[in-house]
Image 1: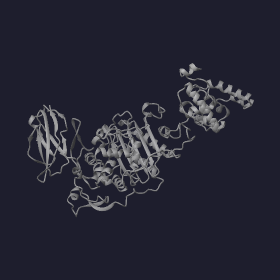
Image 2 (image 1 turned 135 degrees about the vertical axis):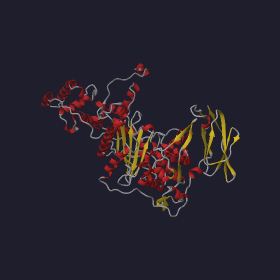
Image 3 (image 1 turned 30 degrees about the vertical axis):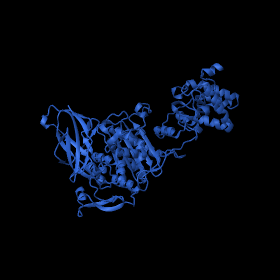
Image 4 (image 1 turned 120 degrees about the horizontal axis):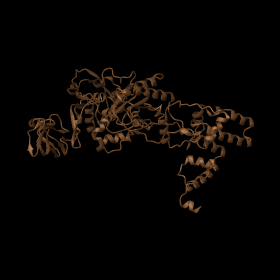
Length: 630
């Protein structure tokens, strides 16, 4: 015995039912020490529970083939019936299968089990648990197997419940009651599968959807489907990935949180933002930003910028909010997948460059209809999982965001007058498309529900131009139609704390305070009602050289005449009528009005600074940037 202890010898001896129950509750590596601990725990268990209760637990949790647990699941798996409808031979078969579930899997052949059933029956006859007629009938009855499929396809959701709840089937509860709506779950799954099949010629193979009741926080539908997943019984690699919880780039679907942060900081729906060709430095190079349509609209209001999901205004907005502050807000909203530092994401965070899960996205969107309050989602009825509730935004901000996202006129520039995003009842909708069309998303919410859709490929392959408005938006409409067909509808909440004013429609009229302009009703936060927040984002940016970047490297193009090769330098954080004195390699150039300067390129190492003049005085001098031209 001492030698067995010293080498931690694996114990292979027989275990009692109680010891096996202990092993189910507290799985351990098989060793002498674990066997010894299980014995102690078994003694304690038998002191608190009677044998019948322990046996009931054992029969409800014992593993069978194909990941079935307990005699109830086994009865449905093999015979497609509830356990109380089984005959004697079928029940004895389930008892025998416990000994070696994979060896005696009935779908792999029934011959092996017949002898074991006969042996068990004879033993029960000698113990007077069966009579002779019953034993004789066993010989004449042939086991009839009937395959079945679960009434609801939700294995990804079940896996998540197991993981998050900390239960290993019966650890604290013998039954876990989830919030999932079976009928809605099946409807959503079927809808996703049909849409994926329809778009499969355009390179789509997978889709996922999450539906919640934002008033209660309950998850009502959780579907993740793929081409061939049902036929392959979820065994192919792509089918095993739950795209509800897998982080992907959300694209513009994150923008409402950015603009909400800007509203909190002082902007309003009429704040004017410049939408013109814009470039910023990335590493040692330059990135040129553009809108999805490659059309620029000059100056636009915040309402129009968000409604049309314009990219360049979003970049200006994150410069106003700051990437660090915005990332912190996203963390408060539950986006735990964003694990990098703000410098890593930088301004790209405004366009959804960081990967987040559909679960995180839908959970965060519930903040808008819940008047700015964040609370974790709920997946079971027996308890709310631990989590904080936090006021993220004011109710004025969140109701204003909902008003913009549900405004068909606010998105006409990019999405048209008859957009698929214009739902029959007031619904706030936002789409997102990642780089190279790898991910297409759509999220929407009404007075009661939040729905999120993702479409793409689990292996990150690009699709053939599938966007958030082309792929997921039709699914969004279908799901909301199903949710609303038997329920009373209501408008989105609009905070009475908002100030209602008539406001000019055209930006030029807003800038000039034209009293006779075509107008519309606009809503303002009480402490921020000024109509004309003219280019406020510029005044709140740091004054710095944004082109060239520090240590920028660029090359002369030999195909272009030397005197035609120029580089556009730029500073940020100044007003349109400010003047700039550019100093390049200690040479002072004449003052220019505005933030840009055209420089004829010269090979070599260079340095540049800029002095900003306002009202005849030097306002600021920028930091020196070094760069090279090859």
